[in-house]
Image (cartoon, rainbow, N blue to C red; front, side, top):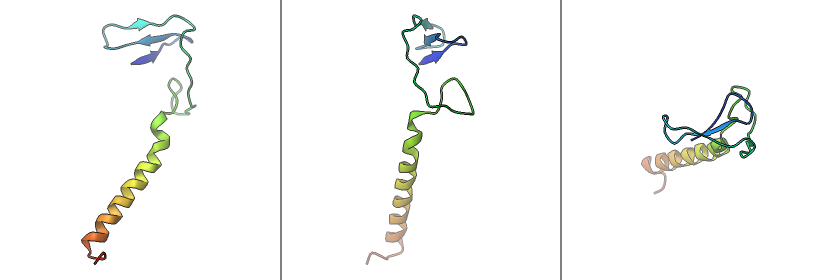
Length: 73
């Protein structure tokens, strides 16, 4: 994982918790979507896909109920 340090412009590559490797200052560009609940990492990228996943789940449940109650016949 790539982790941000406490100081600004300090980033770490941490493949396992016992061997962190520091990136050179200025070598990482941190683009993030602001989040009021926490300030280090911002909003996750998958957040925009959740509505689509929930809509797909609702459609699947509707189709199951539609066939279970015999409305297709």
